Image 1 (tube, rainbow, N blue to C red):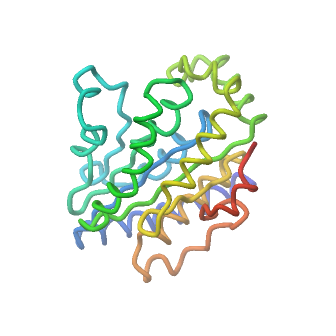
Image 2: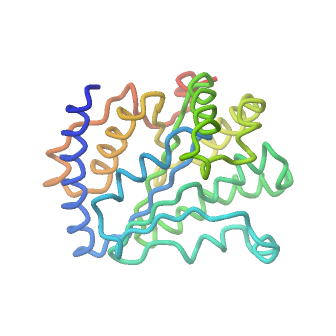
Image 3: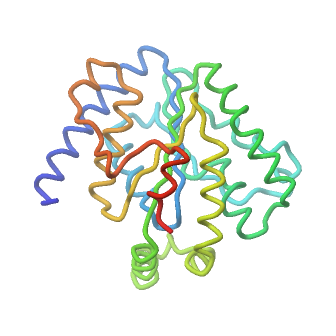
Length: 250
């Protein structure tokens, strides 16, 4: 996509996001957006474009660190509860409780029994949230193995990206198949009518960002705002179903 076309659409979508937030604050909406995906799939860049024009008082991005010993002894969802949105707030989780179904499973940071309890409990927990008036959008950012390798190498060689480098980056490629299996089970077992999974293809960063903004506006904004936004490209953004497994990167 030419830069001028990208910049033009990004600005229009960000203006629509501002209009949406003005509405949401006045209406007392409670909005929760969950970003999950493979390492280097573009979560940080997409989140940056969402929050750039928004109110810092009504918008929070949460990226929790490794749990403390005390937090490890708590009910699993407990450390996330204080960060949930109140009326008029938009909360974005940059990774979430789904760590238990992804990195914790692949790296052995939790037991198979704990992982099974999580897969059973997550849809119930999210149903409690939606029954309490929280609107949830769950995004899985999918990336090809080749593009992930390229981006991880770019991180390692760019001093401006040093803070993005994680010890887990080293095993992202090595454990690609294990992460694929964990992803497939997580998406299949924790999607629901009240909180479905939406898959976003992110090999092209700019196209993915624009489509994520379109999706959020279509999902959360009232018709008078969402109606002026183009539909997300179904080749880039689609709702997860069992049949969609064939469309995910292997």
